Length: 268
Image (cartoon, rainbow, N blue to C red; front, side, top):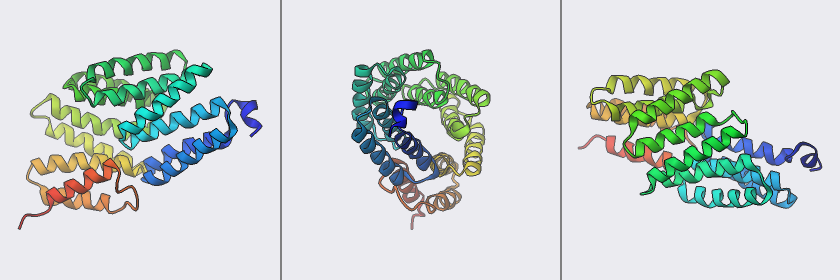
């Protein structure tokens, strides 16, 4: 624990916090949540502000990945309060962005977009580069929620350029999946373009072992195939992907998959 005062954060807290995201991408959302709670408990025991900020910020990120806006709101508020008290600007900007994300699914969508942009500007001013593609994905999703898909596609192009420059490819499948969804909003005849994006997202996710991003892209492609009267093929594809999972069945992503599988069930 003395290393927290030598290097800025406790290595155990930081490692556990990083592990939460890797576990989520790999398809273990419940194990990710358990590790997040472990990191937060350890940080509280240490009473070391920067370590606490790390554990809270990464917990907030994890709740966003799990699509739990109420939990994001609570954790982001705690992160903001702690970071404001101790002048920890980096994670304060992260909390600002994630608070903005919770607003974009409500009637405050435009205000949420403005807040995400403020948070992004603040994050950039710290000199940090890592995670910016992820924050741009959240901004693109926000534009999709208010029917501004073309703006969203511009943001995703920026995220793709950052991924190519910085090599942070963990978000590449997500960018492609979301591009496909936005193309379907922009053009009435964009099904082939969207399908290519979904296929690419699935391919990347499979190469990386990113099972939850693979599931999201598979859901998107299955919905498209359902529209194209290819329900059986869609169900077979989605059932194979969904059948891999051993936990997280109460999370939004797996609930969406199960609901779609039921929709695709042949009607007798």
